Length: 455
Image 1 (cartoon, rainbow, N blue to C red):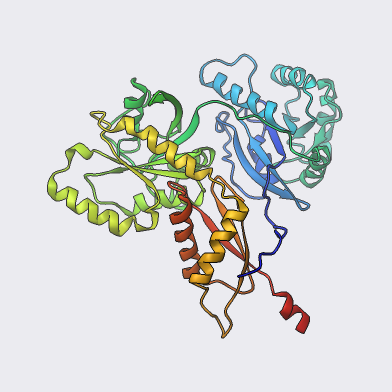
Image 2: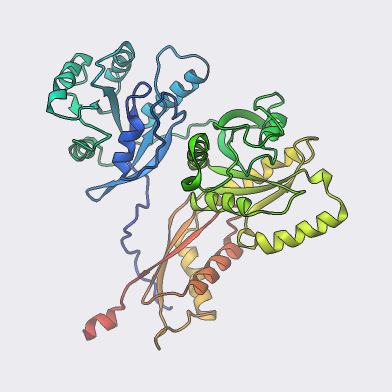
């Protein structure tokens, strides 16, 4: 690997993406429209107001352009309590967006809340697209025309539920986007932590211990928590936003009723978090449910801290057995940050802050391209990829395409076996750290120039 090619073009986005914020009062179909934008059912949809409580980003692709769509909770101008917190999240999304999509229910018409939202958005320096939702056919378009009164220009009629007009709306959104994303400042607020685990491992008890109040309901009956519960807690002199989630008993597609929606909201909480604390009961065997929760965090690409609760209850025999279980069942996440705690007594709880910071630092680590390729060149000379079909592939170039989580793309003249990709990941961790974060190593096969000339 004596020569390093110039960085090739990547199919995946490598820089900041334009942001589209979807806002509006509760239950007008924002999440349904977001699902249309991203082409899959990711945002939780239910026919009651208040299902979405936070701003949740999703990546979307339309006509070859990548962008981020932010689903927000229902905006109310005079909200109090939890509704006020939801409104603040929506307002922040509006401030940081490149394009704002205001969704109004055309079947109801402009309400006082819609008028209040329009007054705020008319003062915005962002492009605003007014969407008249629930226009299922031509007969419903008269209701959409009445929304001219909001003073935001022509209302665009769509049916998010049935997809009517969604493609034309996406074209309009793309036309409104700036050539480069708006430079946004960090929110400066607490980092988001999802507290997850199977039922009755002590998640709500830990939240109460951290917040020093009865913030979450605690009961010996598993499944007390259904909705994610946000709490601002202080650990190690720093504020963190913890989300206590419902215990995940089973896979979403086998859950039903309230448990189904609880599972979806827990998934959304993980997606919206930056780091997840997976709480395990140290006095119980590491179970299939525990493994599934860890897998869910990894697949979401979030940094990971594994906390063993009830550590103070262990005797010597259980301690020795648990160490064997960790070696056997958690071998795939040796990189995860681990901490032993007791939510009941408070033992070790203050150590969480250091582990959270370590995991987030790994999650946001970027290796300079020159340093990365110098390391890879030496590594491949020492241990070249195994031959396949009589021909040994040659690694031409490696780039770190993204952070949060770190994602590497290896450009090679041939396919790299899964075992060699795991070898690369292990050595990247040994060299550069990446503590507490999943990393992704993908391969793009590019034929060598010499082979191309022979064709």
